[in-house]
Image (cartoon, rainbow, N blue to C red; front, side, top):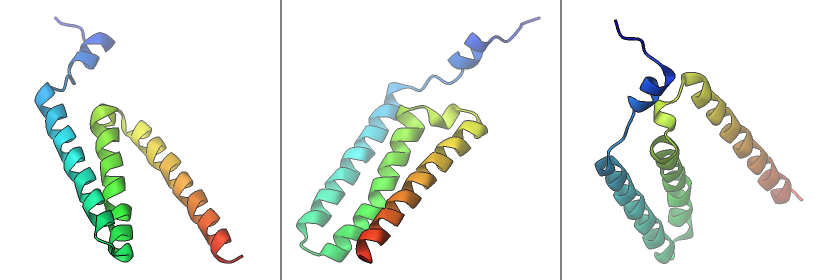
Length: 100
């Protein structure tokens, strides 16, 4: 009979180098897209790209490089809650600046 320890559970989620290289390639491509959008001299398009591409890049870093993909659901919800609070406070700051 085999007993499962915490060490065995940690070893079950080893991510290969291929996955990290693919994610890195996607991050480089998304960075290139952001640079191209900023060079297009279309501020609305650049802002839309910034608001869509940047959270996508952040979620890739969270899930793969910080191994959030393999954590418990409670920890995932805590990270989402913390980021949501950050977005709310930044939004309130911009709203305050806009209406002064």
